[in-house]
Amino acid sequence: MPLEHHPLHREFPEYRTALLNLLSHDGHFARLAAEYEQLDKRIFEAEDGRENLDDMHLLGLKMQRVSLKDELADLLRKAS
Image (tube, rainbow, N blue to C red; front, side, top):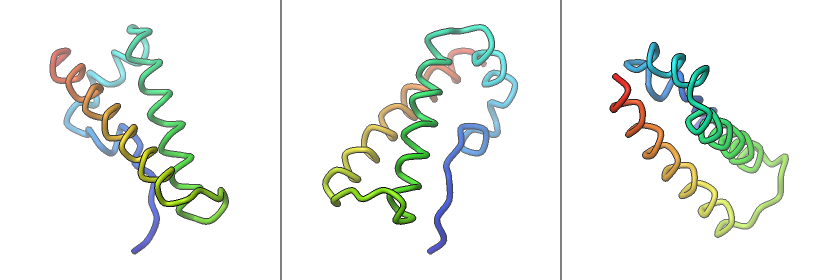
């Protein structure tokens, strides 16, 4: 299975306008989105072998990413 990033614009194409608006006008949302993007990058690098993480640590990062994604999705739904 090919590795891929999970950027917010691809995860939530239906909220494109709300995403752009929140990123530029809501500091809390922008911080959460930046944290999500950093986690996604770190997970990708670990899965690609560029960062050495044990399976439990990687799983923990993935769970954090899911939690952030859920929180961001909720904020996007409320903003739409």
